[in-house]
Image 1: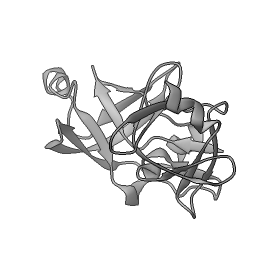
Image 2 (image 1 turned 180 degrees about the vertical axis):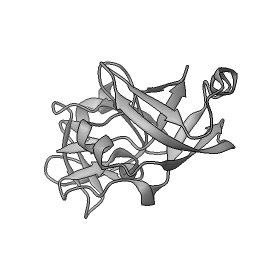
Image 3 (image 1 turned 30 degrees about the horizontal axis):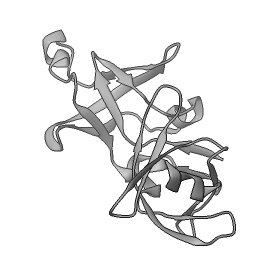
Image 4 (image 1 turned 120 degrees about the vertical axis):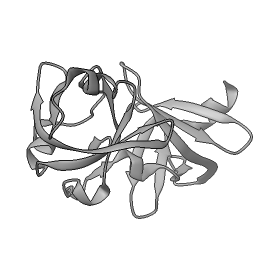
Amino acid sequence: KQWYQRRVAITAGGVQRFYTNSNFVKDLKLPIKVSLKREGVLDTVLSIDTLKKSSNFFLLSFCKVKNREKLQSFVGARLYLSSKDLPKLKSEEYYVDDLIGFQAVGEDAQKISWYLKEVRNYPANDVFVFSDNTKVFLIPFVSKHIGKINMLDKTIEIINWKEWLEI
């Protein structure tokens, strides 16, 4: 399954941790409006007019913003695309933000009282943060630990989930 991250972050004029492939970028209809937020507060609304892949990151430029000082002021802000502007995905693809709130299940489809609260991005792999409202479980998003994701039932299979109770 292919998945994509909806949120991206602006740092020093570049896009940081933009989970995608070339098809995703190719399918975006430019120019595209984006919201820049700091600490959840709307900073400004801009339009991206170009988006190009470099070696391991994306370069972008904003319509009508060519001043280096103005661009520097965006450092540290989070950049959000509207869901309506995102490319349509195939049936086996999903945006990771759509998984927030999904319930954990064991390999036998037994429901567990854990719900996905957030997804943390790390260089090696992402980590799913589940909670049962008393404990938090950080589970790497790798096939050894995360099994089938069922978009219809809104469940995420945790492989050997009882082992996480011992940590």
